Image (tube, rainbow, N blue to C red):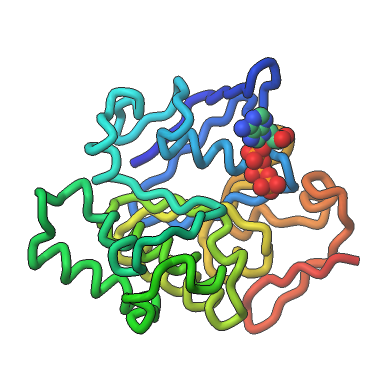
Length: 246
Ligand SMILES: Nc1ncnc2c1ncn2[C@@H]1O[C@H](COP(=O)(O)OP(=O)(O)OP(=O)(O)O)[C@@H](O)[C@H]1O
């Protein structure tokens, strides 16, 4: 579905992705983990076609060959930070329909927006402006907008960051459900335990390189020492691995 082949990316002189090869298929739920500055967000932006790089392929075609409209029908990107504005929540989510819309929204566009608001539990905010809602609510608006795009691939940069515990679980459950339904979900995360509970595949990055990639079998105390420089103990609660920093 989406692939990087020996992907390298530099900001000016500074190389921050140093040869990343990654292949993610339909229906996978992948968490990208690693310390601050590892290159996770940069990788996601390369996948999203926001940063133009060689070596990113979507359905075997270089992302650079897609028009913005074509690209936004296949993938949606939820950024780490969203700026509030004067548009209402409803209209902001409706922007997600832009790749499909004519001059005015169709019945289907409106239905898709309503459904997206419902899935995020923010229907009641529909008529509020996005500069009149909380940071967590704004985060949900951004996710709803991505859902309204009806993408095959959902790229999310720390989507649970501003969310309370219940909302974090709701977003992670939603992502898991979307993946079960065949969507590809790639999520940059800091909360390792949340990732372990919901994602199925884990990519650990450090200094622009991929250090580990796989299912729960890749986890080890040594890996956390190497990636984060932190000693941890790996336990298990209700069949789910739990990382406890020492
Ligand atoms: N626009 C930019 N211009 C120059 N350097 C940048 C830019 N964006 C990021 N960087 C640098 O690139 C490196 C990787 O940044 P990136 O945001 O991809 O890391 P990250 O793993 O997502 O970090 P975090 O967990 O802190 O969000 C960092 O050293 C950062 O300072």
